[in-house]
Image (cartoon, rainbow, N blue to C red; front, side, top):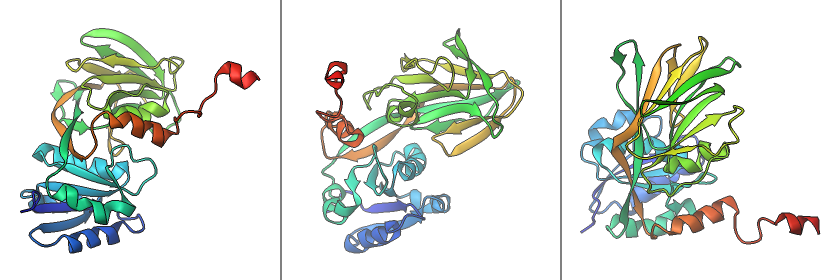
Length: 289
């Protein structure tokens, strides 16, 4: 009997071939299973289907995986990522191999890997907003106006810095291969519970960032009176006003992924995806010869 019987496929609606692959998978492995399909934009219409779902397959890039995770995490549903994007750090299978390889996962052979998430609330006056979850990162950044913002950053009640620039990103270990990496931040072990605070386009951006333990609380307060925005995983955006504070902690929910390879394979995969294999870099002495 198949391990996963009620399966949803979330595919990128504008990516050529993603919808066809979703239909092919559902057709080939129909026997003994119930399937439902949605795009990342119509996923909110699948609430009834999600009640009985025990696996979500995403087809697209990391953005599609993030969409799937945001509905799966609260329901403790594992996610299997099929990559049709460019880098795909969170994906498990390449699209060209999916039809043949996916049966191994459907039969319950994979291990489940947990990735820790962040929770953010906005305080305006005495009222806290509902929490927003993120697998990759929470960002407080300037809005549409091309003007710098000032963000007071407090860690566990102690003032760390007031950053003046484009904002501040708070990243999970999973998100350390995303926006934070593009800013020059370090790559963290993906199963670490620690998280990272990194300024964006400030005179301190050269600093690799501050890594905090899992129990830490970060408070980011907007000090300027022009546009600022809270962003969670790059697609949940909320405007912020002067004096509003975003409080970030580790979330109670976590993302679950199906994996075939052992955890240590992450580093080999990182090397391959970023082109860091032997011979990619030369020492200063070698370059001078």
